[in-house]
Image 1 (tube, rainbow, N blue to C red):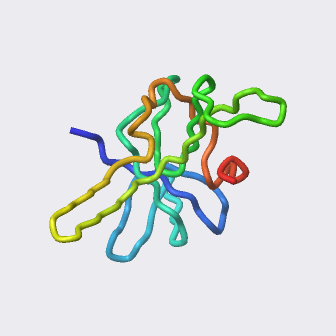
Image 2 (image 1 turned 60 degrees about the vertical axis):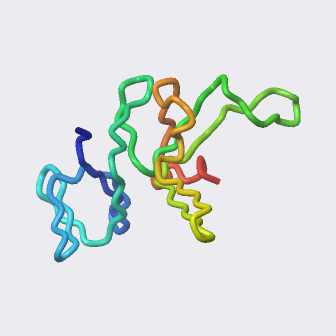
Length: 127
């Protein structure tokens, strides 16, 4: 069974913290020393770790240095970068169905990738 846990980006204080308690009725999150946040973005743990053993959360930016898919002006391969997000897609047309539900990196092995930042603390990585 996958461990369910969250971290959060506090929009006001501009800090990332592990969520120790999450009140769903009143939408409050508390960090490990009891500081409360009411204006935050939640990021769920994927249940996976990168090649350094770091937990991968939504909003993380993963990089695979040898799996380049684009070229720079000098002709060298740029590393593959993926923003971790939950993807939901449905299509029906009366039972000619496509369903895609899952993490954006499921076609790659995250154990071969490094977390190089996240969309909140290092937004330039997601540009």
